[in-house]
Length: 507
Image 1 (cartoon, rainbow, N blue to C red):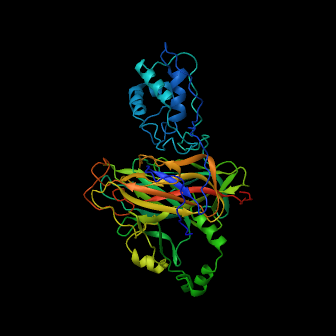
Image 2 (spheres, helix red, strand yellow):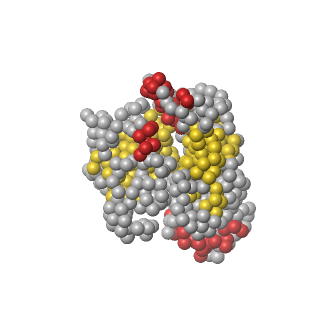
Image 3 (spheres, one colour):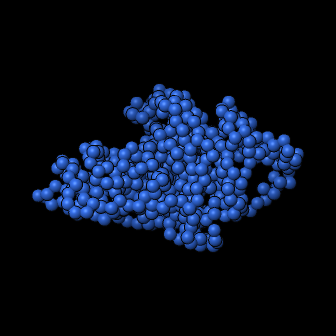
């Protein structure tokens, strides 16, 4: 049986934005039932003869489902932490919740249950509508108390400020007009041991201009040092790029044959350890805040393996000059014994049903020669064909396979403005009927799913390059795979732990 053998127990059906799981010999048993997980207790039913009030009914809904974004130093345009904050926006709140535009949540409730679901029930929407239509009264009794949030705007669900903060050394200037390419800058990693963390967050410093920030751990190329040079070919001079080191010994400027052989002979475990460690502190993308592991899990930031942080930065003009100074926060793990949280990427496998056959991997020299004028921040696949003009249903399929027994924790999708939905046929873990670039949630499963070795996870993404897509900037053009929002991408992954792995250690 091939690695991607079809196993299905239901007739083919077309869905939207689905991650599905298949295994080589049998289907995975998934939890039954649909339970929407909310972060607050059920709102009491509103008496027919009375108008709901903020203090008794509406405040808890807004604080539990909206205030995590609607607070100072966060992404939303106004605060909703109190009645005084919310009252001027009452009619706007009603319009947004009735249309289900807010709170933003895109998973189909028929498939999967997620612990970070902030969607409103029909009853909660009806309560807000009745409150607004009744004059949005505050009511009697004590007002609900807002959760503890970080005053600085950090997104840890317990309201905690980070134990450790790394700020980018400068505020980056973004011009009012024009295109800023995706580019990489480097800063020294300020510790050289293993940091075990329960959460990390990358904050952009300016939400309006930031398309994304990814961070990773790296060493500088042989024969280079951190110095002053162009941020990208022809770009502004900055102090945080690798430049030639005139003091480097000749043997440090190239990788010699013995070293190349040593790298080839690294064990699979050593290579996996370095791959896992490169992820570092994770990304900032719209809609994602602190990445918090579950109880009994831990992540590592490996200062013992790498010396630098690579910041992949992508900014877009807003029509006025802007500044952005990103920062990284880390929360130390209190219990450092636990399972590692890992990431499985679902690499592109087909494009419009045509199987992609990857060529042999390029050497480092071949990669540099092929891309002399760019610093790509993502592993873009050159085999993907461009989306044709005016095509409303272009598909890309991504597949990842588990080599060991694993436990799925969460699911994630990333596309740009032509991202539409995803189709699938087997067990459905996640369906997002209307993908939204501005809210790229990581969907955290209420009940982790155990999957045996040999299982695969598949995401089949659809793109709408037609005039029917109101966000489409140019339906008459081919769409290439690149970092800019007017181009497009496909990134999908799942977070997981290994069934039989446990870690031990101290910060």
